[in-house]
Image (cartoon, rainbow, N blue to C red):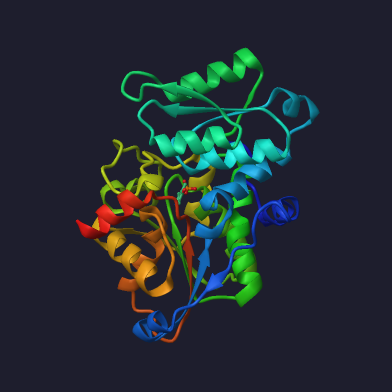
Length: 318
Ligand SMILES: *Cc1c(COP(=O)(O)O)cnc(C)c1O
């Protein structure tokens, strides 16, 4: 097992991404505070560059490349927010980026990735192994592969979201973080244990894909089939080795939220807080709503806002 990143890595990442990533707003809602009988702080990564927190980890990871790696470029496989984050970071750092995406990825996402300057390689998600394609490209062309979550620089970068939150509002009693492969949660865990050590820290994943919860309880990484859920940013099948080691050590519990609860969250954010939040971005809030948090100071990471409006309205109407 490679050494785990630490809080010092999160602090170093914060210095690297400063000026490139947005320091996203922390928003509050009187309606929520009254309903919870608590003080709730939303860290709004839906307003991050490329529409999700993933820009933090991607930019940090690419900033750490040496001259030779920069010249050759980066390769990533992703159908979603990691792809766009890598493509934009690579453009800013002036290096080539190749993104391996499924042939049936939403046209908008493929277009956005190309728009950011990424070279898109399409694969068939039913017959091809995207990791194998990514690795082959890395070997043949000397590209550096940056995975979406299980990488120390990615984890450290994602942790800057919680670091900024604590910096702005001080220590909290509880923090709720969306969970897919665990890059965001493990990075936020490093920041939490340093800056707000007494806070209860919760990861929240889709009910249909609770591999993280199973792994946390079993004490070993559990693999599941690709879950069927509207939370497309958290359809991961297993946690990473690094992310799981940190989550196991630093997180208090893993909770789940149903698709219906995510839609309720999207409706709430849109109607009351005037924000478009993608289904996955609502995980933390959905679980927090069910907890008794009276009198507490609570943080919720809203992880992203990339959902096209046709899908957004269909989900709310359906
Ligand atoms: C990737 C992603 C997640 C999950 O993050 P992990 O680091 O894989 O746990 C949550 N929300 C959004 C919007 C994402 O893009």
